[in-house]
Amino acid sequence: MPKLGLIAGGGRLPLEIAEHCRRVGRPLFVVRLKGIAEPALSGFEGADVGLAELGKCIRTLKRSACRAICLAGQVSRPDFTQLTPDLRGLAALPAVIAAARKGDDALLRFLLGEFEKEGFAIEGAEAVMGGLSLPRGPLGRHAPTPEQLADAEKAMQVARAIGGLDIGQGAVVCDGLVLAVEAQEGTDAMLARVATLAAHLHGHEGDRRGVLAKVPKPIQETRVDLPTMGLATVRAAATAGLVGIVGEAGRLLVLDRPEAVALADELGLFVLGVEPQGG
Figure 1 (tube, rainbow, N blue to C red):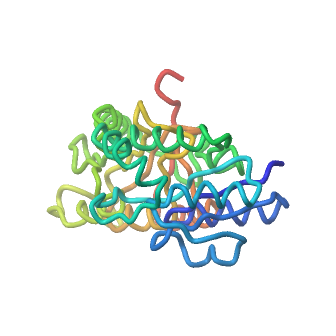
Figure 2: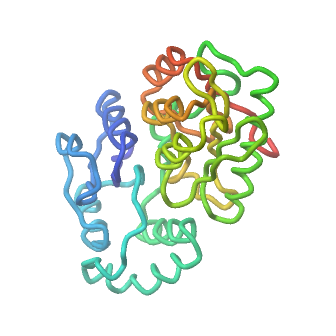
Figure 3: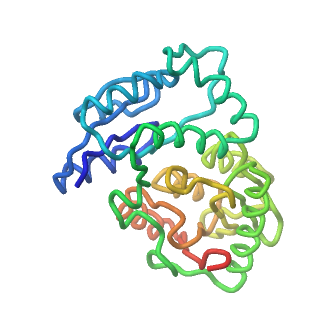
């Protein structure tokens, strides 16, 4: 297996990938994005690199003999005026800003292109470790009723619609009513917002109603930016009174899978994988 350069943002996903590589004996070097990557990644061979230090990132990966890279984890769009780029980052900055104006996916595609020009192969998280993505059907003990499935289908429809506009990946629907759509705030913040809505609009413990859908955008660079769910998602959905989470099979990553499924089972939530659109 070629040595993997893991460019690590925030959240659990980079740590799961690093731990997987350690278990299977795959050579690994972790580029920890300063101020973003989880501290636990310091236990792996690697280096700390600033968000705009493109030249340092590429040089470090090459010196470490990495032949493939995986970009994983959460990285919020930065304030470009506050970045401190190195020479390579400074040269790329005008193109980075121009791509960013076209949306997050255009920005990701530009950055991937910079690494591909340097000879690195790009591997998605699912390609690196497998078994991360949501399977088809219910994942766990609970399955949706016909009424809940109708909410799930509408939530998927809404999530796909906002994805087509490059807005976000998630939506919440309860009893046919759209309660929230996700933009830059992220899924957990969107669910926290749902929890503050009038009590009659969503469910509660003992009478759960409403479904969260998470779907990739149609133009999304799925090698590096598939939507994810995990323990925090399940907890936030439960706090919002929801009854389930739905995503496209093979196109939603489930982090801490055994624990997340056990928690959903305990709280009475279904987790459902459906056929991708056009699949």
